[in-house]
Image 1: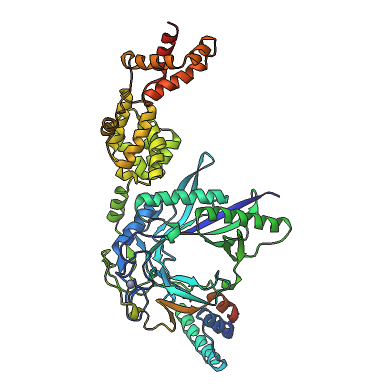
Image 2 (image 1 turned 60 degrees about the horizontal axis):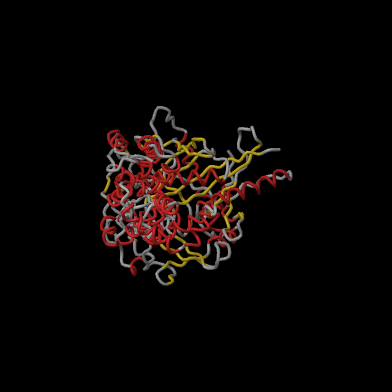
Length: 102
Length: 478
Ligand SMILES: [Zn+2]
């Protein structure tokens, strides 16, 4: 199976809205190839008789009652906002962003 | 060539809980931005989600009402995408093992019943709300984010492509809304965004079973917009196909002002959500007893109610429909019907004059006492008052809250009847209008209605015109 890892890195970086420098891309292409190699080796195991598992704990799920609890004070909510406008988080426009990356 | 339209809807409904799905923040609508937020719904590191029991119960209730098969075990997954309305850059949703599969909703379209099949019903968390600068999403320079909504429990319902027109889509949504209002799962307010609908729409040559290339239509903000947008999109696709072109698979934005669908190419190719099981949540196990319990406690649903109202009270289809859609009015009718057995007359008054007075006065039907309407109808049945007076009294009754008997006494509205009371008035009118009496005697039958009107005026509108007419003729022929 021939995979163009360079293309794969570009795709994943775009999904994560990351801009990679050429040397970063080169390093990550190698790393991604190694990771996928390892996954491929694991996939060689015969798991025919094993139930698929999504969680290792065999515990009943915990539910809470529908009761409200105090939220954070507004200054704490917005404390890490890169930009704020009044009581909103302010972010760059979405559509032009996506198009600029294309 | 004739084409058939295939529409599938994807509906999102906010469930009516007090707190969010995974944290204790309030779900109250309309508050200052970002005040209903905590480390969990903001996706801060080191937090863990904990299920809200009520949200799960409401989701199961809705699924059962939709005839969908609830799974004993379902699982939550992360749907990964970078968009500023998602604080964690993923949404906790359900992918491979949804809460419930299949199901249907029966709608009445063009006087016949039609089952719209469902693919699945699942539970997920709501995203935050974006406010774009500028007039639309396309031209804005920046956006503002409010996370008050983020984390509210959201039910997603996906239909099969069984819907054949914009009108059918609208009917489906109206019936779905009513059904979910009855179950109490959601308040279904499209104007507040607690009910939203996107659609997949494609055309295929009539008779073919495979689906054509679809487009996805978003931003339809009312039931009417859904109908108009889907009819527009069907026509647009048909024009392209008839001209020998092909449909591009894309997402379209409904522009309410221009009344057209506009392709949004920007998002294409990014719908690679890389779902994987949510490691922070254990699979959701629902024991059969809980599912059984919820399905036994399901309230009467709209279709059942409509049928029962027709059978129990002999109501017409339109009345049964009205008393189902307007649940409070129907409850009023039923509670009055316990004490008043002329259902036909009762139904006419409730859907006619009472509904009119309620709309005029803006008073909620819950504030009107059924026993006052019964009292009014009884006065009418006993001929203590006549119809015009009854209508007037009803209006007074709704406005003032006073009982009809009290109002009759207060205003002296008892019916004036009997020779003893009416004859002196008849004699007076005949004496005062010799010219009109002459006309009548010369064969102008219509002249008598003028005289009836005069006598009626003297009684304050409280007599029976038939009785006056009889007495007048008797007097004149003497
Ligand atoms: Zn929270």
